[in-house]
Image 1: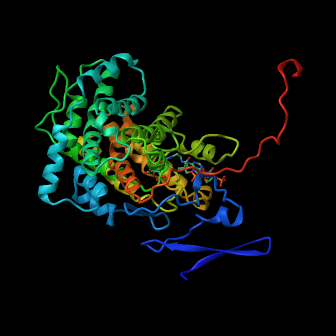
Image 2: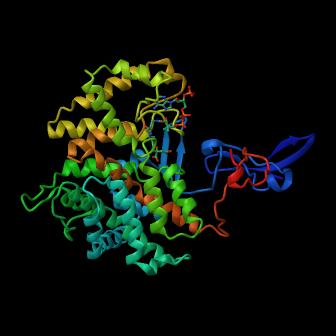
Image 3: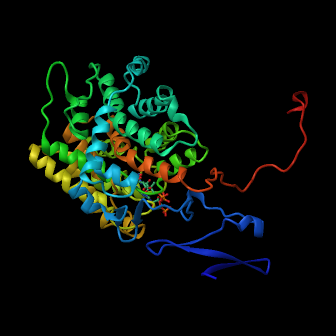
Amino acid sequence: MDKTAKIIIDNKTYEFPIVVGAENEKAIDISKLRDETGHITLDAGLANTGTCTSAITYVDGEKGILRYRGYPVEQIAENTTFVEVAYLLIYGELPTRAQLDKFSNSFTEQAMIHEDMKNFFDGYPSTGHPMGILSAMVCSLSAYYPEMQNPEPSKEEIDKIAVELLSKVRTISAFSYKKSIGQPFVYPRPDLKYVPNFLNMLFSSPAREYKIDEDIVSALRTLLILHADHEQNCSTSTVRLVGSSRANLFASISAGICALWGPLHGGANQAVIEMLKEIQRDGGNVKKYVDMAKDKSNAFRLMGFGHRIYKNFDPRAKIIKKQADKILNKLGIHDPLLDIAVKLEEIALKDSYFIERKLYPNVDFYSGIIYKAIGIPVEMFTVMFAIGRMPGWIAHWKEMIETPSLKIGRPRQVYTGQHQRNFIPIEQRR
Ligand code: SDX
């Protein structure tokens, strides 16, 4: 028998198989735990619990390693386009030239949203957060593509929905930005590739033609690539859990967008800039905020710092920091918020509180500096994260739906409420 784990309960020994992953990670398979022992596990935040096996992304938090389908993220960020990375994550291999051209052309064909969907924007207040709009609009796509609601979609149907989502997420996001600034929508152009098309929809207007800057395209492309997947994070786990009920891909992704919105997750990139602006308004007193983050009686946290998995530098943060320096120099921008961020990092990384807890800058710490330099408003930062994460969500949903004998996700709990008691008619209640 392969290696097993023994658990002794009331002097009885139980054995459970140990599963070893491709990179030698080890897990105890407890799928029969309750049947055999009458016990369940309890693991708030699922910090010690694997909910699936997956072949998409590998993260080693201690060593600061991130690989997409085996390729180190540093090499991927340096040598590929976002569409290429989307193909790799969803289909498992880097595309040939012919496969990439076909995939990329399908994005052009599917970039438009149904004209009726524009009415949705009329109903939204211009102050509506674009993450709420994005989630609602992605879920509403299922109304315009009813054939995609098949609970057991074919390979062709999954391929088609994937392209719809990857392409249309740009259009919906750009339209929500235009709505927020009271400008007319700018439609996708068939002659522009993924990133330039998105930038054009964001920043062109009847008053001025947006001039595509290759340095900005390259910086944004790198950011999207770095956000493309990160194994079982909160939003991806949400997509998998919702999809396990056989909800369609639009509905599953819509739920993932909502999970990403939270400031502890994707919403952190917006919260980092708001924090840096607060420190700037407060005279740049970085040490005061580092001390606040350490003070248990204070709810303040250093946004963009810490990570459930990385107990070393987030490899993405290192690349993004380099990109931030590069794009600001290229654009001739001096952003005082970047100076504050660098100072914050410097002080925190020398402080025992952060060292003991292995808290380092994460993917969200510097990304906002680049979005800001490109001219993207802070409310759109988490939407940028969602656009980047779309390929990962789709890849995980596809991997989940293709799992043989897929089971609906339904965790247990430990009940801590009242014992049985009898009903009290309202007249007798005190
Ligand atoms: C993302 O999972 C992913 O992969 C996510 C992501 C992805 O690509 O999908 O990488 C993207 O979500 C990055 C994280 C963005 N969030 C933030 O930057 C928000 C600030 N960071 C945190 O709140 C926190 O670090 C989390 C949420 C990221 C991780 O929280 P954990 O793993 O639940 O850790 P914890 O809250 O239990 O913290 C452990 C200790 C605690 O102190 P003690 O109780 O041990 O004394 O570290 C402290 C925490 O108080 N701590 C912080 C801190 N983060 C953790 N203290 C101050 N500032 C912080 N940012």
